[in-house]
Amino acid sequence: MITDDKVVSFNYTLRDDKGEELENSGAEPLQYLHGHQNIIPGLEKALSGLAVGDKKTVTVPPEEGYGEYNPSLKFSTEVEKFGEDVPPVGAMVQIHAQDDQVVLAQVAELKDKEVVLDANPPLAGKTLCFEVEITEIRGASEEELAHHHPHGPDGHGHHH
Ligand code: ZN
Image (cartoon, rainbow, N blue to C red; front, side):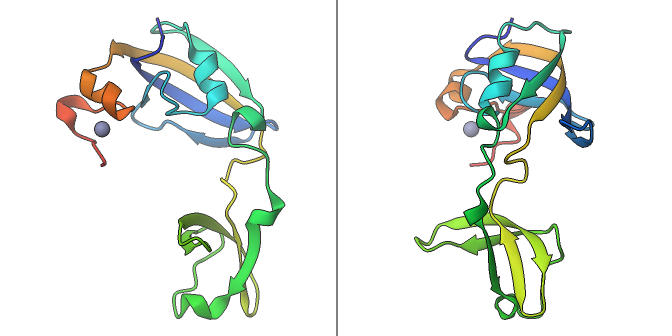
């Protein structure tokens, strides 16, 4: 059963509230460490107590998903800043915010002299409908608990 400190693998298909598919887990199930905020709160809460083989449809409102859409995070920047390499609409770019933090933003629109960027998470403001199937549940290693995320077989897939 899924409880805190278990490593959980699951397949999912994510649709918006109009039934349009946004993404899915693809060839490999997604793996996360339950109770360590690896996935959005609304989904983590709904998976609690499920067992291997369980299937569930979970609807997550924006406030338990990627947050409400914040219009002030959409802004224009001069196209010259990108030099020859103007990114296409939909591309993700890294920008430096005022306090020198690096923020990921999506190109929303290209104008003559401006690029309109949107630093909201792409799924902000959306009601998310997940169809999930639990494929594996196992105990976490001490190292995984200390890192707050699962490690793959033989410790591969480690990213910091
Ligand atoms: Zn780690």
